[in-house]
Length: 445
Ligand code: PHE
Image 1 (cartoon, protein in one colour):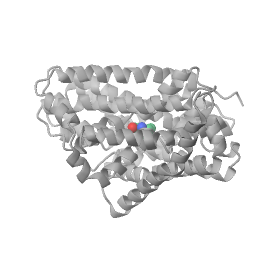
Image 2 (cartoon, protein in one colour):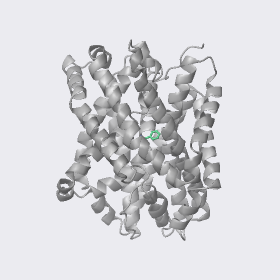
Image 3 (cartoon, helix red, strand yellow):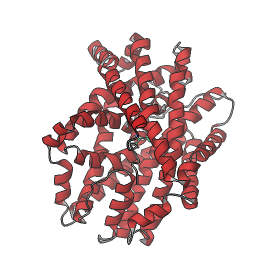
Image 4 (cartoon, protein in one colour):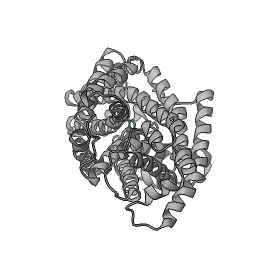
């Protein structure tokens, strides 16, 4: 077996992790939910959740990955806890499952890039979405998206993922920034800022019981936790950089991109007098797309917007394929490109029902979001904080230059508050699953 790869630079790891974190969740969920749940006052709740709960959880994944330098399943065995491999297996399965339908959505985005150029969706955005989101076209574009993901992952850690995300993540920030400036110039945009960010403590306090778990769940999903991605990416770190510093940078950049996306989509919708009372797929593919029909240069603006959505989706998707590819090449004597193609093919097949019928997509998403993700995060936290414990603190503090107090704070937060928050999310998820409420990232269309 050849030597295991590593990231060429620390920035390479951080950008790859940010690429995984910044995805559809930031663009089509975060801005709309922020507006709905109290604007700036929700942002405070979200940032507290991301730093107080998301950060300790992402650090737990980093510790496991870097200490073991192995894929998300074998890592547990390497650390001396063979039975805990089941936790890694749940994460790996979750990533596999999510990628199957995420790729279908990636295919829709590809379609919309072409549709922007020709103006195909301008006249009747809802009908257009209905036509392209299911059936043979969706299937073909799901294949194209998956092929792009396979291409990047097949090229390897340093030459594939690191090089790609080094280009992709800055592009996301620059393009969204430019679009935000453009949206600012549209007449009527200011109502969008008011809707997005004005603090509404009433909305916050009235729905507190719904908002807090949402903020926690969103922080987990948005930071790509519970899918094996962060364990896998951290396993390619070669060196004693501060995991703590990396974690804070990633949490910060991820929230920043969510806010930036809000500064694009909400002013754009308000300038066109479109009511953004929806989130999820409908918001981006119908409402925002509808706005492009009426603004000057809408074809180009639409193209650029969907291009940035594509980049965000791709840089997330590669992190999920890498989870399984990493496991396969750590354990079997096969080449990375062969495995990327083979496993990409299997994931493509798993996504076929979602491509043919969006009802399947909703079902896949609900199961992942409400059950698999929180279960996997819970297993990782219990392992890192309660089972592994003291060596985890050592690994976390390595190269950080911080005092022991920080490590202990992490351990106790992870042991208590964070686990309670995950259990609550899981309980709510199960309730949603069995009482049949709407799924998470892809609400009913
Ligand atoms: N963090 C991603 C997002 O916000 C979640 C994700 C990662 C989804 C990887 C799929 C693949 O979209």
